[in-house]
Length: 355
Image 1: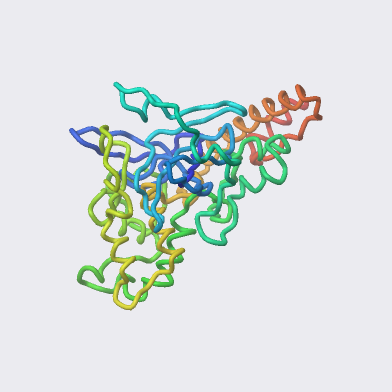
Image 2: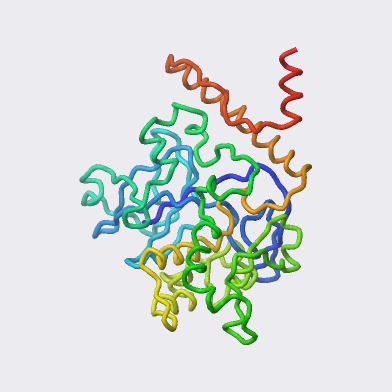
């Protein structure tokens, strides 16, 4: 089971259009993907084993929006949850209601296998990989130790185009290195016929009309692979405006994408490692996100930067008040307010209050 955390967007900067069935459409603010791609920054927190009876028990962070994907041995999505859940500390939630037959009642005649043992610790989606930084901090220090730990995936990030701070799923950080190592020797824009004409370089690409207000510097490789955000047989992903009814297993995702199938079989002399294939499959199954944070590869002017900084600082201030109220109730000393983004407006505000 793949466990995915979502990051809330702090402010609306730029937009793109998404198109669905029956002429439906929607406008996405601060987009992190092109066209019909993912809405939110997505963090793969880890994976958990599923028991023979279909049960699964694991530890996951509270106060964090989570959704789940059932995956096969190759890391391809079999079925995905199309909503998300957020639980408070100590809260218990079940999946009945949606995941049950409307005219039948369950029979409680046996305990699930997963409940006969302690909950699992989420493991890295790649063999030998590190734990997600958020989970590592929680395990080491706990959620009340700092403002960053309390805010979790929504901790403040500076407005810099630096993939090192982007612990969400980033195309530039996770997919482009695979393309650089295995693909651009041929797919470098020099060919004049398909498929060699597909340019998989990390250079800035030309935006389609539906995304020309996105304020995002999508790469040539990303736009080439996603066909500018239009779901198709080559890259087949589930998107928000696609369908409402339940779909059978393997209805979409990497396993139904001809690009991933080609890479899994081997393309000419190119062979991807198991880790590379699983990473590529995960990218498709997450609905082809480009950004691992809302500030990655942005194309913002100073006014947009100030809007973002103000929204993030406001979020941090309220989270700080909330955290210290909890610590006060536990008779713990307050933690300092950290994570503010320094800027002219903030310095003026601090000066005003100090006077």
